[in-house]
Length: 97
Image (cartoon, rainbow, N blue to C red; front, side, top):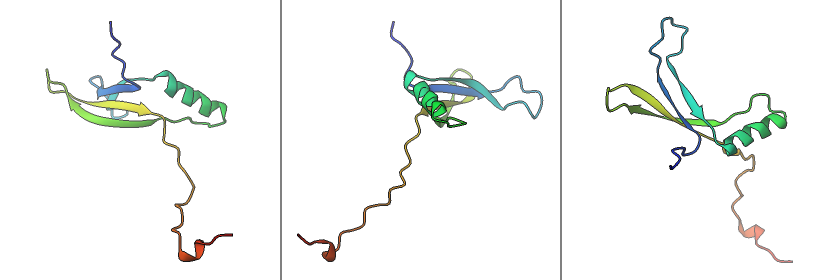
């Protein structure tokens, strides 16, 4: 049997058990793969107090009953670079030794 797992993903459905305003509007699950888990563990081991993954969500509709839900994908955050963009070369920069 083929695995249905296609990377870190999950769903959030409207909370049908919501009785109070403080109850969540949506509930669901998020399945993480080994790479994502290793990334979280590495962050924790490197002193990051609150390790993160990046989430993206798409609003979807269940065809059978019209219920709206969010399809979620998780990924390792893209590394932020603090390197400034390279300075355009000018005539003065073009010299030989």
